[in-house]
Amino acid sequence: MKSVQKVASLVLMAVLLVIAGCSTDHAPPKQALQDAMKNMGELDSYSAQMSLGIDNLEWPARSGADQNGIDMTTVITGMLKGAKLNIKMVYAKEAKRTDMELNLQLSGTTITIPMIVSGEKLYMKLPALPMFQLPASAADKFVELDLKTLAEQQGAAAATLDAAAQRQFAQELGAVVLKHFDENTYFKNVKAKDAGIPDEVKADQVVRFTMDESNYKQSVEIIVNEMIPDLLNVIASNEAYLELIKKSKEDVEKMKTDWDSVKAAKIDYLNQNVKVNELSMTGAINKDKLLTYQAGKVDVELTDKASGSVSKVAVRFDMTYNDLNGNPKFLYEVPTDAVKFEDLMKQMQLPLGL
View 1 (cartoon, rainbow, N blue to C red):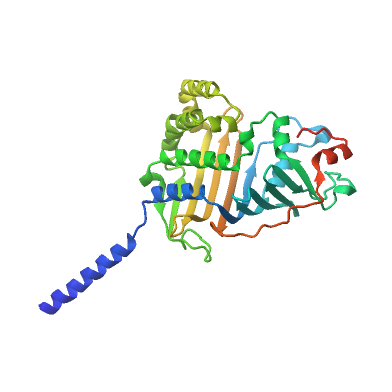
View 2 (tube, one colour):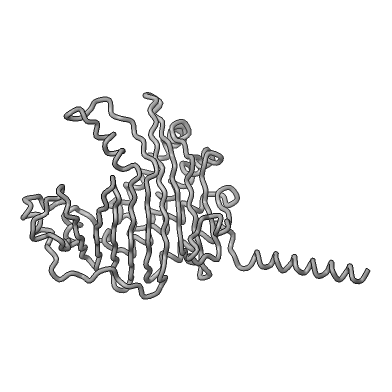
């Protein structure tokens, strides 16, 4: 009898240890994702690789063809279906610098665009494509744009150039979006292997957010009645955010009033015309409560009840983060022989405004 009790005690102890191991210091999935996103907004530096692909794109042809009998909607959707964008990025807050390399795979052609944002300067190397008709002086050279001057020409506020303000804006709006969705309905912990997390990614916890047909109608109510009004309240209460979107507080207050008057119509439209097959985001979180990997999918359909036509869009993305608060190496040297944007426009006999 004693031996049976001893075995039972050992089994109970083992079970308790397993339970303890499974519930270490992991936060609930919703809170874990919210905390990780907030912490990412406070990073001083990182490097990242992002991939975005268009799996499906169906858009109804227009009733009348363009010149030469060609429907450009069909041409463009045909080109974009299967397109893929790969981005390498390095960010350093203290240096006020972001380097990017964009690689666009489109209809069997790869277009590479190197970019550097340093302070108030943007350097961009345009690809030598016939459509650009670049002069010889700009061949294989960076073009330099003064972002402050460009913003002034376009009537933009200085805040639009403030990377820190933009990151805070995106971070707070992201937090507002997530907070309105119920944890049990939309969030769950998943195993790294089941989530398709790459082997090299360090993941202490993996969280998935999912919206689909099963919870779509509930989601519409949340978005229209809670999330949008809350987003507008956040924007209206922060002068920096108002500068970013070039709106006054009165403008946003009017938007709130206008939105209240059309809530019922918006809910009806979204329920009747939009179908969400999947809208999901998966985040891998390391022991420091930072995101090391994100992946998402958007698969939606829009029906025009009047014509019966259906538009479909399916897009996926993934992003891997490295060198979190480390010393990532920039992708390029800041050029000393860059061609001024103004000079390039004069050579190409084009107006300066973009």
